[in-house]
Image 1 (cartoon, rainbow, N blue to C red):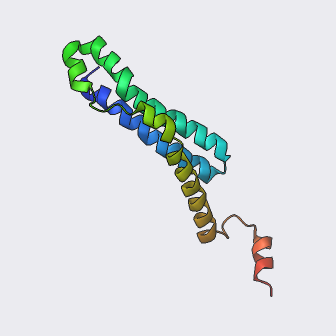
Image 2 (image 1 turned 45 degrees about the vertical axis):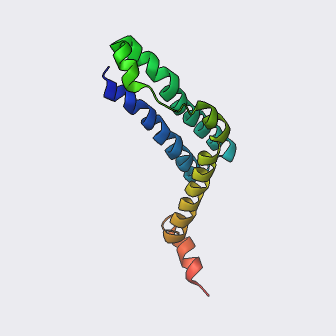
Length: 121
């Protein structure tokens, strides 16, 4: 496994931690589920960056790989405490997108009889 792949895993997990709550909010899932899954992925991204990537680099490349992958400021502890905020914002962004989609495309899901009734005075 190359160094660039090891360095790319953490941002990919971090991106998932932002996209999953947006999708959960858009699909109408519960807020608690969205925050828990988003928080777990957010913390996992920082945990991977701080600890697991060092272990992978050590296994595949030795000390030189560890020096290439190591970060100056670990962020796992901060992610544990502040990791609930991005999923919370993302969940309500997803709900807002769903509301906007219903507002713009509201008549698409109606049957013909429902559309006819809505046109009557």
